[in-house]
Amino acid sequence: MKVQPRKGHDLKSSMMSYTAGQLQYIVTRACNDGSLTERTIRGYLADLEREIASIETRIQELRQLATGSAPAGHPKARPAREAASAHRLKATTQPRRKRISAKNAASRKIQGRYIAYLRQIAQKDRPRYQELAKTRGREVAITAMQKALGR
Image (cartoon, rainbow, N blue to C red):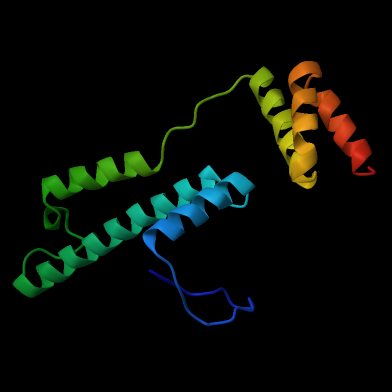
């Protein structure tokens, strides 16, 4: 697989090739480093599904134009099976949001602050703060990391 670099990035070559195994390692490493989140990956996959649906819709429109069948916007232009498929696709790409309690929202907020500070701490020092969070709580660990970072 060939990967194009982003504009403004200085790389030795304008095109780089990676094996499937190398790409898997890169994605795993980026996830572990926190530079590629699960949410971002889910977004990419949702974009993929939307793009596939868009291409399939365009192909159907072109087939209808070629055969002279119903106009593209006409309800009979889409077979029932395709309409049902599009409905299922929409349901899978946009999951329902679950309501969370105020307690869970507060916990997530603290967790976000904890992770944000933890990422700023050197890799070798992180276990100390992680242990502190386990034993005395994330708030105490956040305060200690703020102190260590000079904030």
